[in-house]
Image 1 (cartoon, helix red, strand yellow):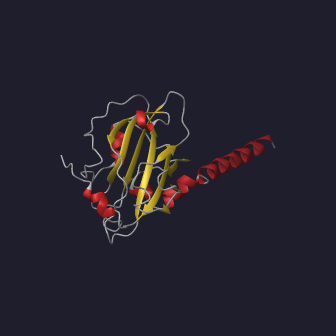
Image 2: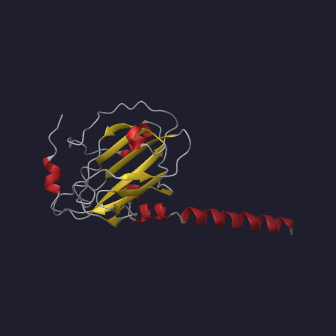
Image 3: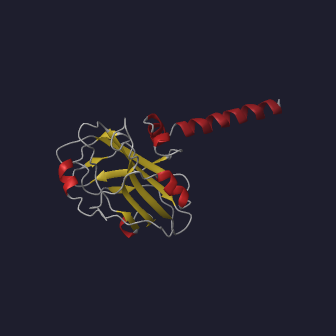
Length: 209
């Protein structure tokens, strides 16, 4: 009888753990929208809260926003640990289109050594650039990821200004592996397609060095 109770309890515990894992809305959305495996191998459990103060919109696990709404840098919030450092990145795996992603992935934003939620205090590796999906290429996925760093990292990366468009064919998974960041702990994403603000964004790309 005791053995039977132990076995049943173990099975019940396994079911609870499996349900909790499957119940993560972030993980489910990342897998359903093929961000796993198109961009990363393992989806995060936490959801980054992302808002764009200038336009008043919020990112919500695949909702559609416009390039006009996401032109200015957003504000982000995720669960942090005291004294921990984080790396934040944003990438488009659908460059130039989801059906022909030969430039996968396009680097939109990378900041390392972020103390807690103070993104402004981190090391900018690629300044923020909003969405600029080419006309006629349909919806693109714009993915935000946060990694908890094991320690302060010295990044050996070319720093890109917001005027520099040389951001294609970047692999976030290789980047995370190179700097021993592990798997992302938090994420979120939206989708966007071309609107009339995209040519205005392209016109700001004046730094190609």
